[in-house]
Image (cartoon, rainbow, N blue to C red; front, side, top):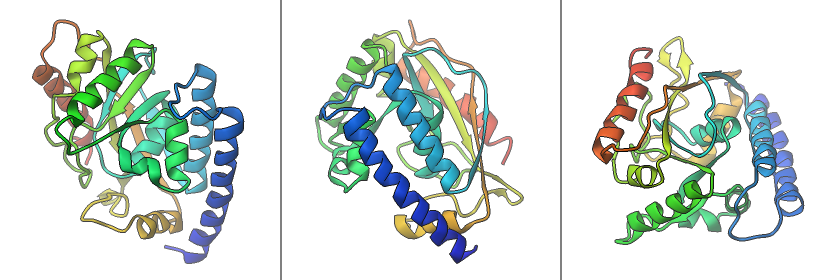
Length: 248
């Protein structure tokens, strides 16, 4: 880890964040309920790709990008997962509503089409399903982490099936996406965001590293029509686990 490298990248990232604010209000408009067009998705993807480059991510993508709308489901290891997936695929993520109030990040998330939900509330699951259905029905892709928590990157836990109902009802294809951060130790030990780590310290540690390898594998798409939620969740989970657990 090199502290000077981390400081240099942090300064570049802060400048890029300011550019992101400009993009939000000038190129993406000022709507609070943002519904990105294809062109706007490309702007967002380009900006996020630059974020990955600035913080030192070497990304390898495998597989074929499917035409929208698809429900992208991935294993969850770090906050980096969102940057990587959204820099490659034109997707809207589900996020807790509190993120909307975060300085800078909340604005960027809202303008990139994030679907904010009240997690933990009785109506949270129904709200998430409704928002997903609306977005998928409008021809946009949605992404989620069905494990509902981050792991150390060596295993893929059970996928919660509830959100798969939105894909079934809109007859949207499921796109399993396997995330890995390869390292000579198997999985890069600095990447997993677990055990209540401090976000700022964690991000700076990654920026201070020489390079961080990342792999995104787009597995074989799974049709949702005439399927059950639990079966879809299991098929998607196993597809991703085949990549992640056999490579760790």
